[in-house]
Length: 468
Image (spheres, rainbow, N blue to C red):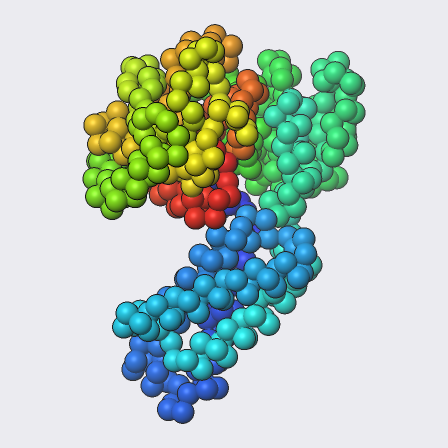
């Protein structure tokens, strides 16, 4: 797996992106040689045609990403794949028409280069996807992993690996002392066989030849073969803690196996002061630009809310921010007025009956969050960060969930890592999962990760897909 934007991305996905880019570029280049009356090299070099094609390739790659074809590239339905490619090319043709109308030549291609090149893409790209998912990614091989122990983190990792072959990871099995096995016996780890006890490490390594050893023992004191693992590490076998692999493939911190010492002594644990200062700077700039650009939209939304249901267009709620400070959050009203008059503060639910018909659309498109740009402008929030919760809920959650207080060490955000990765949920279990995503974000806070989250949020707003 390759780490980009503070996110671990499978090498297979990186290879697929680059191969798609090369194939699409070649399709339009061949179309230029095929269709142009003048010499193709004149268009490609003298008329900057190479850059025009490269820009179009970038547009098409974004289209593929927006259709989630890199998130899960395994083919579920060939007709659906063909339909998605047609939609992506249709958007490209629309952009070509707009570019021609506006005399914007950055992505403008000659008509027949666009037509013939797109036909080639329509034929080649689905065929390449089928070939890649059938043969190529398997030929790239997988990393063979041996687990020491069968903690809950290990169990989650093995289940994830079995469901997502594109990760390029396979479980050889695990070693676990019989007396230390999890409930259900030492052979209870589904998806990976028990290969013996910890003392059999040398024999198993010699016969199974693992690429990586992952340590996930619930109790390590006096049982972890530290010196032998050190020798194996120097022999070229990668050794890592299960918590690190868990973070890489899930994008969140496992709180079930998390020890306070891991947070205290972690060299990577954020946020650094420089990262927070930089975040405050670009959040302020983005909020100013965002308010100017979206002010007409906000005025229109306010009028729609006021005219479709009684009550104010804008609501104010107390939320918990940086270091536990309470501030007033602004958002457009998406529920009926006084919906909590008799119940007090209540968690929102999926398909909540208190939400108005207009409010459902505002929430789906995230338009109800636009007034929070003013909270960012005032320095109470950032563009990206953990979502701020109401004080009534925070008091309860801090008592029930370990490490919940730590999410308040950064400013809350309009969007966040948890919001783009986890479905809507109103249970303690969902809150724990979102906390794990928040802790991962805090640990890896950086401009690159914020840019990744913002870009993904834009996809959610445009296509109505994603989490909340």
